[in-house]
Image: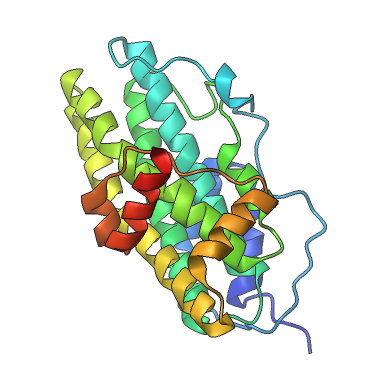
Amino acid sequence: MRTPTHSLRPLALEHLLIVDARAKCAAVRAADWSGAPVDAAARIVCLETLPGRAHLPVLVSPHRVPQRSCTTRQGRAALIHALAHIESNAVNLALDIAWRFADLPIPFYRDWIGVAREEALHFEWLDAHLATLGHRYGDFPAHNGLWDVAEKTRDDVLARLALVPRVMEARGLDVSPGIRDKLLQAGDHAGAAILTRILEDEVGHVAIGNRWFHALCKARGIEPESFEARERAARDGPVPKGPFNREARLRAGFTDREIAALERAQK
Ligand SMILES: [Fe+2]
């Protein structure tokens, strides 16, 4: 039986293919996701290059991304642009995990669509703030680090959860307060307020990643710690880098034991 195109996972893929970031975010926020049924068993094949992406921003290697000193208006615009790019990628990642992996519990798909909608809102806040600094999304080069990890984990949802929400997105919890403080020091109170709201939402997103990671590990009889280490090595995945925001990570579902292990690995 064909999966109806209005069902949630094909709809997520359809949105992932939208090229313009602004149009994608607006569409993600406007779509009737709650009215879309979920066909968890469907095997969906996509032959197109993912994600849909405009020719701007130009993608460069991480060390060629411009300096983002907050002391100049241009530097601040570059920083806000980098954050908007992360949010744009985060929308893509949430849509991708929602369409790609079959046979998961229905709340799994609904959770990630909820994340995609919040990430789209984050993009819109930052894009609007960028406009007050005289720039648009696409004006600065950006790097593709987040999507690269999505590519490396395209075949296994558990590896995706281990390396994207639990490493890449959790890193956002660690660095956000410092970025917010720099914006405050530069007198950018509106930017700092956006960062504060985003951090709160990101705690929720990482919590969703943690919850599903542990639930699926349990369901598959997998030991989380050794799985994570093995997958990171096998897939050349990102390594968690401290210092860690212990308070935010605890709220996002990391255990004391996990945080202690992360801290030990830094020594
Ligand atoms: Fe976000």
